[in-house]
Image (tube, rainbow, N blue to C red; front, side, top):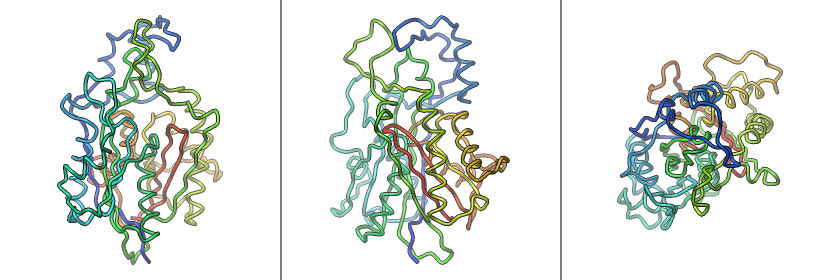
Length: 356
């Protein structure tokens, strides 16, 4: 039986480390542009207690989203051992395109996937590059989309990239800016015959766009004297938190049911690294849907403490690190059943179940 199999992964973790202590000289304001009276030490301590984030990574000034996407892509191609000319599709998930340092416009012409194809030197005219804008679940959606194209007979091999440089769209006067970071992850996926029933077993995608549509958005700075024409990433944190807790576990359960997989058989859950409290809450609620109160130890690897929330890049970078034994206490083995799940602006949710 043919299934979609991940044959190679790669990632890029930026060099610049931005610690919570680096925000102690920042002035924070509310969304109503009023100064926050709490001292920076109290703000950063409370932030870490809630999110678990101690530090995050930013790209250097010379790099852009497409650049780090290329680095991750090359590593994934090398890991898979394929000839880049045999790639049928390049799917690039991002949200802001290339935002050059000290500029105020996103650059998405041509598509970042086209830039990756160019940088990889692929000349095959039937290698089709295109971008996906799907919020933080973009990379997962790219894999789901590749799987659909494979089943339709349109493609057999795809390169799926998730990359973001959120440091270029942050409002330094907004406390929420401490959540976000930069990074890139990629995977080569192929349609192959699987003797052990490996590959993607099922997937699920949901979208809620009534009142949820602006839970994440672009808005003006919290600083009163800022230029109102310049927009930054903004988030209704409480709304996002409540939405994720109520909806993501349902999508994950739906995905497992489609594959006829028992929750006890799941080896590892790769969930979008939004923040520690949120991710732990989602996992607890997932197991409660099965009337299970005891969460298996080590079921959910996390990188948000050191890498922050890099949007579309969190899951592919986390998966790559675990595959390469770079995250202590976590590994994947042949036959393991993995559950991937994400949530983000839209609001969008998705998941896929995978046997190694």
